[in-house]
Length: 283
Image 1: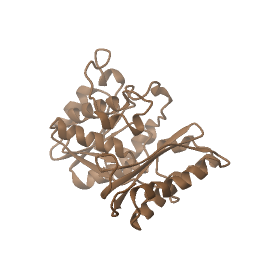
Image 2 (image 1 turned 60 degrees about the horizontal axis):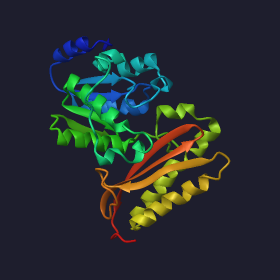
Image 3 (image 1 turned 135 degrees about the vertical axis):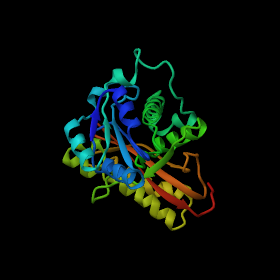
């Protein structure tokens, strides 16, 4: 595995790769969810490139994001990664930062972007930069962050970026909690309390499978989340929404996503589950 922090060396390494390339874009602190992305890319392509970069356009204080560079290297080597790119900000944003960024449109101003102006501008800008540098056949993204996947897929479509976007199902702990680097911030009681998020979403998915209307799907999920607000470890619901596959609002039938975010202690957690709405819409 070639590891580099240098943009020019990445370009040389990419030029030397014969065959197809799958790209996995990360912020590091890699875990089994990232390993699943690497496996999916390896199964489909001759080579895999992984990028590790905590993007300052997304976070006011990127220094607080967990960093485990040596563990990241071990995971990438074990997964058969060909090139690991771990650049400094000076390699990513030259001349003191970008003057041009990617605007995500109205679907990038809801859910995860509420209260975080410009958040998805930063996300899409760095993802497009990594895609342009690596020039892969496909980019592999985890479906835990459905909004990111949908916005990146829409950007690729609207800007005619020649790459395939592959969503990979969320990897979960045995008790259902979606894997996330943020889980390490949870105390044991907070970790237990956080289970209400996947359980609430699962209740909504079950209601949809039984033919419930969209409003009742949301109600089934919200019931558990509301109960957790007054628990021993309070869980604050930040949002709970039904969207279409491309974040279309207010789906009434067909494929959809049930998305939720909570705050447990000082930790923000997100999750999403796919479902199928079979009942006709109604109030």
